[in-house]
Image (cartoon, rainbow, N blue to C red; front, side, top):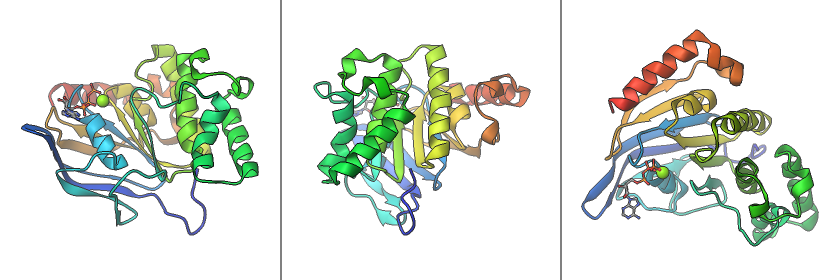
Length: 255
Ligand SMILES: Nc1ncnc2c1ncn2[C@@H]1O[C@H](COP(=O)(O)OP(=O)(O)OP(=O)(O)O)[C@@H](O)[C@H]1O
Ligand SMILES: [Mg+2]
């Protein structure tokens, strides 16, 4: 959802980020920039430091050195303006779907009428209108992930941080979720950093692609993804898409 006139544009950048846990170096000088309203897909091998990078971008983890800027201002802690959906999902298991979606706006003391509107818009956008009063465990995996993204979007953040949001889903459901997310972001342009180890997911969802090396993570390549609005499942058969997928996979394996 855009932040409206006068609000932040939502350009998120990282400059020479380094992060170590004791002797273990995890981030080794990461530079990246997510443009306003675009999706930056960050692709890297398992264990390379993707979740750590996203947590640093969210302000949940402090870098050992380097900095994160949102619209030129240093990020120094977590904020609803950088909504993160963690790898394990984020819904409160004891709250109904409606109360999960209302949680952020209520915590920010938004008026009740606004909370109702935001919640009903997001229930419609997730196709979960009929499930407002159920608990997360009564939803399917795909429904839960849509709801977790909606919960974060309820805060109307200029920046959305997604950590392998569809990693635990079967291939068909994942493809449906990709099409759902593309449609959602087309309606509410939101600067998004999507972390994934899935090449197809990165190419389907990303406007730009950033490749990470094995741990400690460095950016090994940064490039546009040229499929634009043609994305959706039909692009999977486009020979240019197939070639790029094979090429990027080789580069990830060689990272
Ligand atoms: N809080 C922490 N304390 C110590 N080490 C950590 C901590 N968080 C992450 N690490 C280490 O950092 C490295 C990268 O972990 P991270 O979870 O960022 O990788 P990832 O790319 O997200 O992995 P995956 O693909 O499995 O999700 C791992 O070696 C992990 O053990
Ligand atoms: Mg991870």
